[in-house]
Image 1 (cartoon, rainbow, N blue to C red):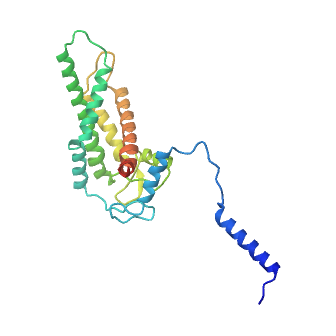
Image 2 (tube, rainbow, N blue to C red):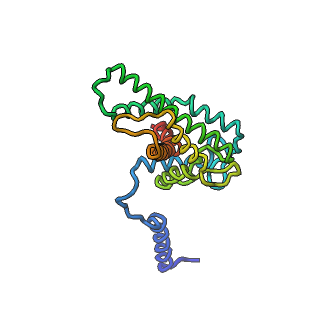
Image 3 (cartoon, rainbow, N blue to C red):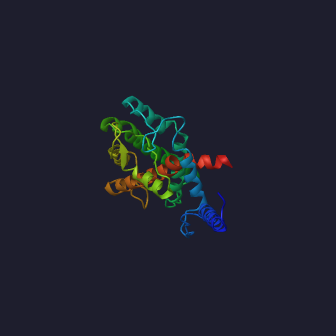
Length: 247
């Protein structure tokens, strides 16, 4: 068959339209001023790249790694290591003790040696409260309530969604049966440690540290510390290390 000029024009037009459709974006998205900073997008990308596998482990349908429940012995050993063998616990306690001592009211009658001794006492007090909280909240109570003390990472990609998830894990955890439930273990561990601290805490000039109000204050602070720890060191730290490891 011989193509007429009209057939050539129709063919040329069809090809041009198909080429334009392939090149042009389907739904061009305008650039928004409130887009997340590049570092958050990079972290989210790193998270997405490593979503299907984690160290070779299989994943569940929601993207979270499948894991068997811990025994009571495993929970207690894990809590003991976190309370006494984790360098971060000593570093954080030391920083907290230094800040507390720096904000104390000045007592001119005290010598440098007295202030140094007060600093060591404050370190011991803070360490006692922290280790009690970890042992109870990650070992004793999870064994009693049959809950998993381990952090469950988010299966989302967005920075905001993952941040909210990390904060929520202060109040929600997985049971040994794998189902989400109120985090009785952590909440009970924090309030128990805050209350037991009245045994070794001592009031200082201008600051009450024993009684109901200081107990509730310590409880609130511990929840805030847990939330920050979950956000930085549990949810995003693996991605941060991956991002900086690529550079």
